[in-house]
Image 1 (spheres, one colour):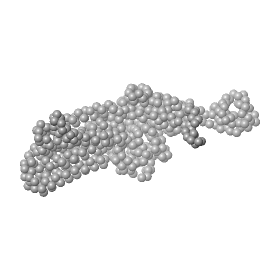
Image 2 (tube, rainbow over the protein chains, first blue to last red):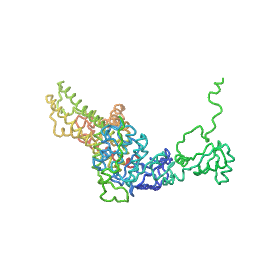
Image 3 (cartoon, each protein chain N blue to C red):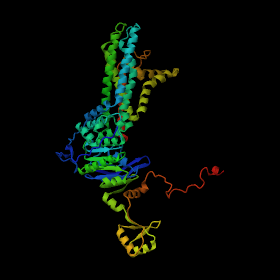
Image 4 (tube, each protein chain N blue to C red):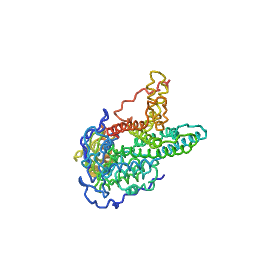
Length: 322
Length: 296
């Protein structure tokens, strides 16, 4: 169990993490979601005692990280990729970690086996691909067979097979009763693995909810209807007590999954339909809406309505005409 | 290199399926069958020993160090013995000075790399997560490095000392006394290992390999160079102090052929050892305080 209480981290004027309070429970995968720069990694570093919080408190099973004398048997963490010396072999890297926590040497081989790096155990880690690096980081996290696991963006750089492996691994770790806390900036990834969801944006807590609740609340399902007899259709729907919203280009959107009902109504009234399709707003969209105001780095797309009018006079226009 | 076949974690490997003997205090959840050990400094030392012996920079710096000390020692020995020059009363041990002066650069580099390279690679985060007691990490690094540097320097310096005494037997060299033997082997090795330890601490403070190495080489060379350019009469005092307390000059004290034979005011006997010990202690306190305070 990881408990955060009013956790705050300030770098000068900039607030990286702002008064975060939540609890990560054992037995389930908890997703930690937020756009880039939301403060996920900073929060994880504070949990691990690497960064000192400006204010607030974080405890692991009631203890501060500094109080853990054999931390790797308590909590295993995958932080940023490749946090090791590239000149050392994978085996020696894990060995020095095992020794510092009094973990039996045999565990090094076990975890190398688990992550599938046995064949390259005696190779220098600087030759490792991104995916192999992630696997080594995960091996280090599993080394002490800890009750709590924390993964910062574990699927980064993994191939589809590796991603599938990670998902299965996280679920099986949680099903053994461990606490699994995993950060990501991909909602779709979290939807597949996490049972609980903590969303932050610009360091503030935006949501702390079960994944099922989040999906229920945020994924709007609706039916898309197009018809050349749009006015008549609207009348018919209105009489049937169905609310339809026009969304431009002659498209009607009807909330709720009533595609069959709408089709039958249209048939009864001999209205031609060009389209009748059930739609579901993606979780990704819901996530983007939730974090829209708090995205740190916006890409400036030309189509954004907020962007200023392009200047009428293009550079070079004058001499081109002349 | 092809990516290895990932292996799915088996549903219940032996170490996971084994029932925990006693429930872990602090609530429900997973209980590992791995025995929980209360760790101590010894664990950190074992870890640091694995680290220092498993990177190539250790082999390189120490290899070059031994090559410099023994190589230069042999060369000077051969040159002096074949030139039929008379050492008239000087003991043969003093010829070891040049090799160790140059070799100290290697020990400085290794010292800096022991700490600073962890910051450069990001390894320090892994280290600190594995061992949250930052003081213990620093102490373990210091102990392991000091012992390695001391033993290697002692072996190289002793070898050169024996060679010189044997080679220059017929050149009128004085038979070195027991005290001179001790100073030119154990004494100089302690001094160089401490100089390396100081570099290790500077590396921990600066957290940047190139920066810390530059600072340490500057510390070794700058006082002599600066002193060379102090012509003014009024600066005589400063100039002498810079000469006398410069690290090369302190090294030469162990060979009793002090660079500053003109004035007898500088450090003598075992003084350099106490000076470097004091400097290292101060640096240790500083590095420790900073490491506790800063984010990793």
